[in-house]
Image 1 (cartoon, rainbow, N blue to C red):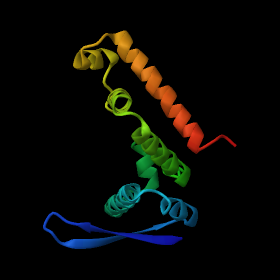
Image 2 (image 1 turned 120 degrees about the horizontal axis):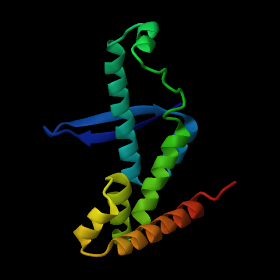
Image 3 (image 1 turned 60 degrees about the horizontal axis):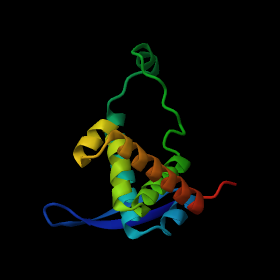
Image 4 (image 1 turned 90 degrees about the vertical axis):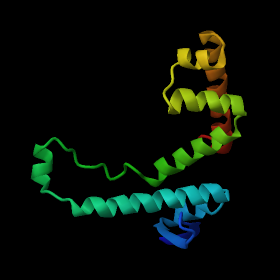
Length: 150
């Protein structure tokens, strides 16, 4: 395990060091990434740990949880591979031309329909469909180039 630290400036102007502990492989990979990716990742991990601490204060028995319809959390839900994949996709999105990135973000992340996007841009549904197809093809090329299949 390795510790990574960033310094943030809070809303009141105070500076604060944030440290997270990561698996060696993940920490090594993260140090090769741009500073904004490192910062976002460390802040995400820090916030997730804060939420975990809050959630551990509210406990109930396992039997009670299962009776109330809760499943047991998957230990691999936020594995290093999942996080690396998410970061790879985010980096790939930033490599797309602005127009393609906008269409992908609006359609896949914000959940807007092709019809909504067509109205916003003043083009046909077919034109939006073609833009989405081109953008996803570009994303696949970028992801394949930077992370070729084994």
